[in-house]
Picture 1 (tube, helix red, strand yellow):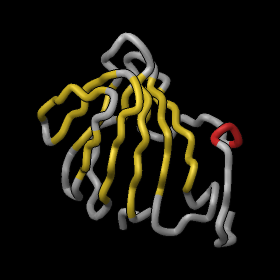
Picture 2 (cartoon, one colour; picture 1 turned 120 degrees about the horizontal axis):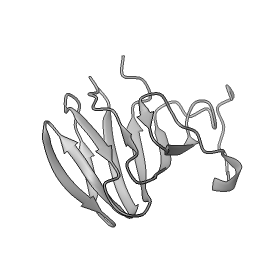
Picture 3 (cartoon, rainbow, N blue to C red; picture 1 turned 45 degrees about the vertical axis):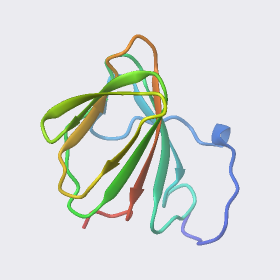
Length: 121
């Protein structure tokens, strides 16, 4: 979508995708993203990771991220230290922070992740 306009979408309209560097059933729906809504400043996704699924450790140069865990539990690595995260935890990641998240629990790990700005360049 290249047009810039207000959009109302239902979560069921967006297919599950496994983005690059996500492994083992780490699925996301890009709900507000340049490709799906034409968003210019924000990437808003819901993700569900199956047990043992993960995203590779990575860092953003200028992007901020917020993770909001809706269900399940897992491990979030922040600058080399692992933290248990579970339902109702909110994690704010600053630019320059190495991080990853993995589902180390018994059921699915579901969370919202918001990234701004869209580009890390």
